Amino acid sequence: MRAELTVVVIVASVASVALPTLGEAVKPTSAATHLVRLESNRFQPAVTRAVAGDTVRFVNGQGGPHNVEFIADSIAEAQRKTIAGAMTGAKIGRLSSPLLILTEEEYRIVVPAMPEGRYAFLCSPHAASMQGALVVGRR
Image (cartoon, rainbow, N blue to C red; front, side, top):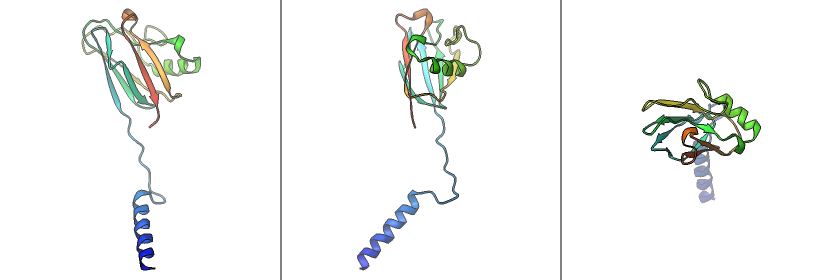
């Protein structure tokens, strides 16, 4: 009987540490920032994994001008609207950032809440060789 009581006390102690108490706030996970370099006619990295609320910084390197244009034909209309709304500031198209000309010039996008999936993009001036993807997931 004593052994059973000891086990119950240990399990209860572990459970009280693992679970928040009633009224205790659960802290949200903070958003991350992801760096994508536009360098030598490539996105580095070519694939960026992020979740809603994260920021993706596209930073121009050598070989510009460069930009980021999400490929409309590969994205459902509802998500095109969501991405277009998240692409703030100057743009050269509905799903296209401005041309980044200067070294270290950047364009930022905060990943909007949208279905998990792969959202392809390219650099308009170098579309044949400069392609990438934003893979949206969950925390």
